[in-house]
Length: 374
Image 1 (cartoon, rainbow, N blue to C red):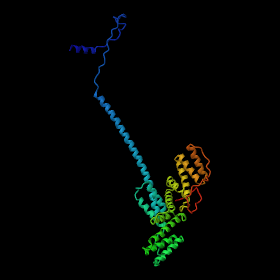
Image 2 (image 1 turned 90 degrees about the vertical axis):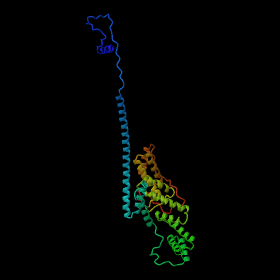
Image 3 (image 1 turned 135 degrees about the vertical axis):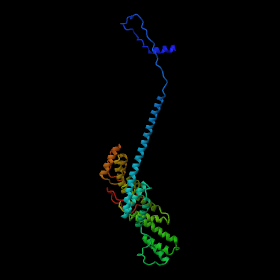
Image 4 (image 1 turned 90 degrees about the horizontal axis):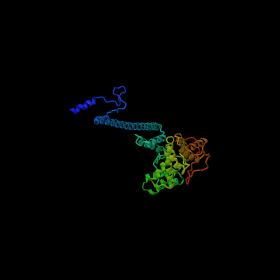
């Protein structure tokens, strides 16, 4: 107890100063100054409250991070939903226009719009059924039926099988493909067992030649495709006919993207133009000319996006395909400079694309700067 009291008294006593004031009675400059040893501060135990505060701060930081990540995911989702809504609106607009054109019996334009929708979203409601309906309508209008109309044959043809067969051969010899087909079909209907291989050969040959005539002379690519496809049921196509069938399909597909997607139009006509540059549809524009115009339009599109090097490539190919206007040349030079290369004087190229072994008979229209309507 005595020690504790002394300790308490010591704690209450004032700490002596390090020096005696000069005016003190006992002041002596020769006396040593008495100093008190410094009392070390007391070290208390760490409070658990500090640990709680630290844990609370850590929790707040974690909550902030989780909240920020959630906001980022929400922003991404909102932007994706907005883009999907915009695309869906565009496709719905194209679908509505296609429905209007079907009512107006403008099946070709409706087919182009529906194929664009299928390319963008095959699951779009009702688009595949409508596209099949439109293609069927085009097939009906493109190629007449094999069955003779009542006006052409008001009474049943009762001629003998030999006479019908000879008549079909004569039509075939005279390049009268439609009558050759109709006569052979009558023969098959009346005498199904009469020389089936020879009769089928007449039908095959007539369909093959009529299909090529439609493509090359009548500029009816859809009708030609239909006839050549029917001919394939009777026998394999020769290489020339197969090429006409293949490139006609590519041409029609490329035309379906006309004014809708210039990049796709360039892709398809780039496959047709080198092999069949004179292949033409009822618009009067050859595959070569369509390829050239699509390249220019695609180059303009890329230039608007400031993709200068790719734009310059499109202009350069277009200039090599035929006479181009000064505007196209200026566009090429501008894109070439901004791409980083020197501008070049690009005059009309004398180079011509390779032609197929046997070019189509249809004459190619003169190049023009106008964009054809599919």
